[in-house]
Image: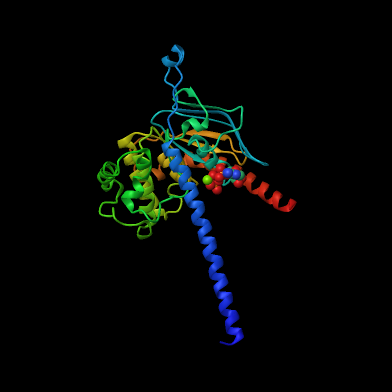
Length: 324
Ligand SMILES: Nc1ncnc2c1ncn2[C@@H]1O[C@H](COP(=O)(O)OP(=O)(O)OP(=O)(O)O)[C@@H](O)[C@H]1O
Ligand SMILES: [Mg+2]
């Protein structure tokens, strides 16, 4: 073989090797995150402190966050965030990219501890973030399906790790499949599914892990507009049936209003709650509600708040780039 051809072949092989290394690194990151969310699913529950008679008299929020701050080295992701969520409520969270939304979820899921000084209460009891591991169900920003497990076995992952016998967990998941639009797909693997189906498997896993509070981090972010609209209606039906409390991150204002009882708008980083907007629209919500004057009015208010924060976020990114 001529030298030039050998060199071209060697170059090709090196490039293949390099991209294989990158793919392996990416797979390692996914597995590491999955292990974390599985850990979140299996940790022991917190022992509630005895409630005072006064506290017992008034209904307490399911989740309360006071003066919540989180720094990562030089970066302050959250600063003085205040929020509370009532039992059974559907609260949507919007805000500029990088303002700390996923960080907030990681704290509530028990995967990150906030800085000292903040107060975290769950079911009226003050606790550490780590105490919440396994007390909430969490769907992280990526769907985290394991490529070597089929639909049913992906759906039962958290149950299995929790110690539920596989046969029992599978039977439970099989019953739920039609409701999640996955009937007949139980034996399929993630690569054989559409984006919407993958999201439904991940959601089914989150629903199967029965906890009062569900955290959904941009569950429909990667879907096309039509599939997304169908998934939103479907989620509202499922939520109305199971009546869990939901915290839901989205970048889509229409989605935030259509789904939520309340929308929290976050500030640019460091994130805190800029605006709490009650969505006083009747349920069940029909698709045409998005053109109702009340919906449009809410959208204007929210867009104004979000645009202001997105602009701040954009300007600070530009300033940082200039400083480099
Ligand atoms: N584990 C970490 N270590 C260091 N920095 C982190 C870590 N997690 C988040 N950050 C930083 O905290 C900030 C907030 O990140 P976060 O992922 O919470 O944003 P987000 O609002 O979810 O953004 P997006 O809308 O793009 O998903 C970012 O500047 C990010 O780089
Ligand atoms: Mg995020």
